[in-house]
Each structure stands twice: as structure tokens, then as C-alpha cells.
Image 1 (tube, rainbow, N blue to C red):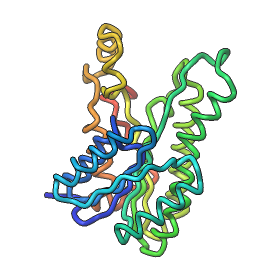
Image 2: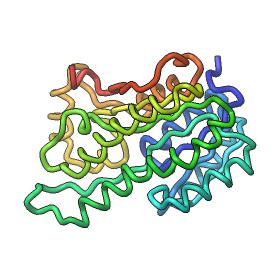
Image 3: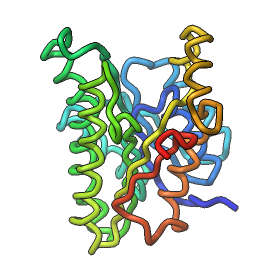
Length: 248
């Protein structure tokens, strides 16, 4: 059963990691996929081919969602290329970790801009399309760090907590037009980024999780598929933790 058959989805920051996993899962469930990348041009081109091989329409756009004008231009381009938009997954994000005493104002502001402003820009730009359609699903990728905080990640935690507050507000504003907005809060997900870390450190993190393992990009992607699909048609304003029981 393909849960997203015929739907058009935009996924930001999809050339690798969790974003790539989401794009592949959406395509496997029948969605036509528009996705963005910024620096990973070769990976973006490779993903387009990989998605098209699954029998759907796919197109990558080099676009920076933290720039309001680029976000607006992206939405216009996707509508022109695909005809409509049914779902947006705001996944683009960065980290610039460090203790607060050593964190520069620039490191704080850049993380807020990329992680939080991008969600605002994309949502503001796409809402006019969704309002005309009187339907749509917005899925914002937050983090367990945005729920509980984390030492050495004050900037990242602030951005991801901001996403949760923004998600709940948008759900209240747009719900009467049949537009849903939810957040997914991943825990420790094993991607290319974690693969370069010391195995002993990673195993220590796994041991601290009730399910005794790290998550995979597909675990987050499956939650996004559910929230984008009609199976979650009465769910809005919620935060779905995908964390192996970490916050239990």
C-alpha cells in the first residue's frame, strides 16, 4: 500500500542523512518529490536519479531555505514544475556545538537562522498554496534536544525548541483550512555524521537508550510518511519523538 500515491512533497536538506532517508521513503510510497540541497551538488544529482528509478517524478533544487527570497522562489518553482504541493518536510539544519562560555554570537545566530528561520520562511511561502487547496501537511524536524536540552548545544536546542513552538502555533492558525502541522523529534540517529565518531563513544550512547540501539534515517522517515499521509488526518500540533524511548 502506497500511502502517498500522487502527492507532491518538498523536502529541504535532502541530499544526505535523514533528509535523504525521508526523500527515499516518500518516493517508495508513491509521492513525487521536490528536494533541496546547498553544498552537496553531486549528491543532489545522484539522489534525483535514485528517486526517479522508483518510478516517480523527482527534481532537486539548489536553494537556501534560510533566505526568505530563495524560499519564495523555490515554492513558485515547485508549483510550476509539479502543479501542486501537498506536503513540506522542513529538515534542513546545521550544528555548531560548544559550551556557552565559548560560543560566539555568530555561531548562535547562524544555527538559529538555518534551523529555525528556514522553517518560518518555507511555511510562510507555502501556506498561500495550501490555503488555496484547503489541504496540506507540514512536518518540521525538531530534535529530542529541543525537548530536553543538551549541554554544549544551547544554540541547537534553542532552534529546535523554537520549531516546536512554531509548529503548535501554525497548527492552531491553519487548522480551520484543513492544513496540519506536526513536528518529529529524532533522538540519536546513526548517519554519515555519526559514522566518523569513536565507536566506544557511540556504543555508550546506544547503551543509554532503552531500545539499546541508535535509530536509522528510515525510522525518522517512516514517522514523516505517516504524518504526511491521510492516515494521520486528525493529528495536528503534535511532537512525535523518534528516540528509542530516550525521553520515556
